[in-house]
Amino acid sequence: MRAYYTADEVRAAEAELFTRVPAGMPMRRAAFGLADVMARELRERTGGVAGRAVTLLVGSGDNGGDALWAGSFLRRRGVAVRAVLLAPKRAHAEGLAALRRAGGRVVSAPSAPEDLAADRWPPEAGAHGEKGRDVPWPVLELLGKPDLVVDGIVGISGHGSLRPVAAKIVAGVRCPIVAADLPSGVDPDTGAVSGPAVTADVTVAFGAYKPVHVLAAPHCGRIELVPIGLQLPSANLVALEPRAVGARWPVPGAADDKYTQGVTGVCAGSATYPGAAVLCTGAAVAATAGMVRYAGTGAAQVLAHFPEVIAAESVSDTGRVQSWVFGPGAGTDADARDRLAEILATDLPVVVDADGLTLLAAEPGLVQGRQAPTVLTPHAGEFARLTGSEPGLDRVAAVRKLAESWQVTVLLKGRATLIASPDRPVFVNEAGGSWAATAGSGDVLSGIVGALLAGGAHPVIAAASAARAHALAANLAAHASGTAGAPISASPLLSHLREAIATLRELAAA
Image 1 (tube, rainbow, N blue to C red):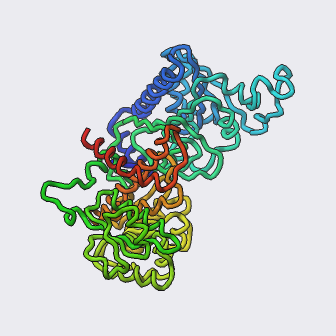
Image 2: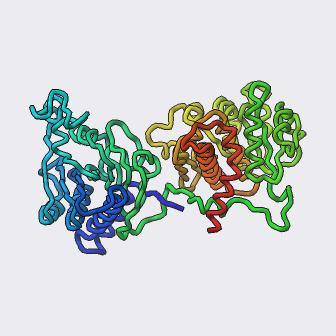
Image 3: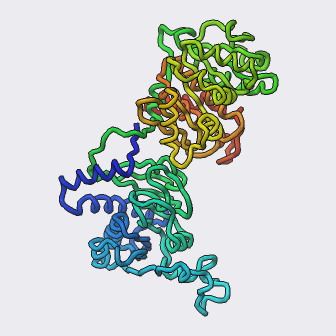
């Protein structure tokens, strides 16, 4: 599993490291790794290292020191390095001296944002600043003509958005950005962005991955980890690697039959929403459940798509199952409420989604205190109905609180899907895109979770594994037409689910 550590956890590990190694060594290690990544980026993007140009955006903290030391290493490799000091009097002294010794150029940014205004063009730039296109001339003068820009503005101690001067300079960058440890302006622990922030092409994480690297992945770009010798505790935020998901996915053995592989019960769909029944049931079928039994009024449509499903009109007539999925398109009337209550009264694992969550929001007692495993799969709006408030900026804390309060497993959907279960780390799955943000996608996800629960998986592992396979299926569907990033709907997502599972298994076997 990949572990993510909060700013406090990393600072504590750094304090311990400083007792074991000479002063300055951790920063040199981080800076050397940063310089190595930057050199590779220059080589891949421009064809070489010597003779290229790099501009460092340097704040007052240790991240600024990391950037300055990295600049000194690059300067020795023939790179033209310019450092823009955003807080000249508080720049890291040793790093600044090292850059100057190596021949780097140092300039100071103005303290007032109006000094970077677009109307401060020199006469030779013309009335509209043709030389700088859409970038104010003072910003161009500060940045130079870099092939790469390094964001060393703030580190893990920084919170809030970029200050006005930094925001104006960052807005003027017209080349790839490499962030030192994390993109400035993005909260290190929550990934929240409350104003201007850096969007990096590459982020070089020092010593450990932080929550920002997965919760704000679009701002981080590709993540490169540079070890610096930290001794870290058990993490409270983790991610299942694709190989681990593939290795855990149920594979029938020689003695297995349709019953031992897990029988999934699905109660979904209605006359108004028959498609929800098809998508949810089809996902359970594709996720390699040994058998799927359907209960509801959408039997005709389900059987038309999946004749292998065993259908009944009521929960009581369904027969033996090993898990239940309730909710997608099921309705919120009295009959739906009674079906949900009947399912929750069993001692089987249950997934509750969509309309089922609306029913629970009105009657939490149906699930609170339940002893058997229960997985709730809300999106942000459904989460708000369940709890009375939006997840907010700290989604990890919010999902953990609901799981602990209700003693259930909660899967909070999003590009970074979070899965919390009482007394366990929070699991996170970064989808790598938002292709699955489409109608019916959640119906597919709940069916996958139900199939894995029927196979005996722990609820948090079932939910995390389902989220990974679901995201991969969405990415495969988006690229299936040959046009990268084509919009998708839930039906092709369902059709690519088997391919996604096969890919995960292949990764595990490699």
